[in-house]
Length: 271
Image 1 (cartoon, rainbow, N blue to C red):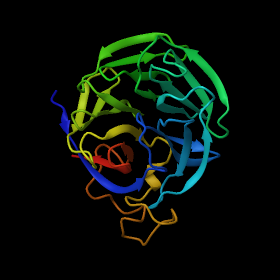
Image 2: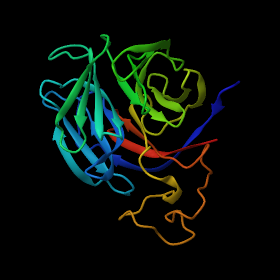
Image 3: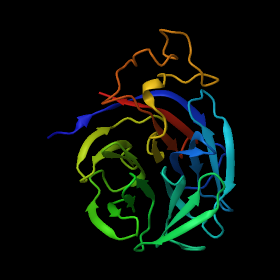
Image 4: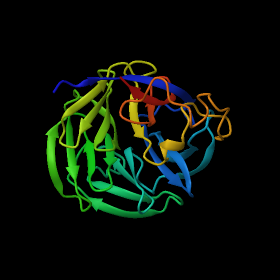
């Protein structure tokens, strides 16, 4: 079956929480102290901060931050486990403090190091968690892991050779093929379902992807408001107004971190 060609309807953008010349920016939608939030992290030359931005706002609103666990300063991908309110992090190989053979659990409210799972050594640049399995990527390979760190499957990524961002969505994963400047939707079996060849921002800059699995989109408007409350009825700021263009499959929001222009873009797929 041929892949579906998708477009990206941008509904807003935020500047990075702080400018950086680091690399391997990571994003995930999560809850921070009960609030739906976007967790942001990027590598720097010093101790890294997790920054939490409140979802559903036109402008960025920081609601918290904490430092990475001690010596875990090469984090390159993060994912969220909603049942236990944990952020899971993967790290690239290299020095200092190489932990590329671990997945690290971090309490999403406090930043406390909540556990470690040993996994095979991999120069990982992206991580996703769908509630049952982890998937991580070194760019050219996707590796499925159970919660104990056992490898269940390994496949060549069908999205090129530079998968820098990965996020779990219902029955699929959304990935960034950064070098080719496209987004890809992959099935649970690793098949390419759809692709979006023109993500927003400077070409080749998408380093992280986050699918919003946190909010109930039946009550979310197409465009965010200043205060997060519903706008005028009949406007795109009201949740009862149909989205235009109509979203692919169902209402959703995807967040994209463009490292080159230091901007987080958000919007949805349509065909």
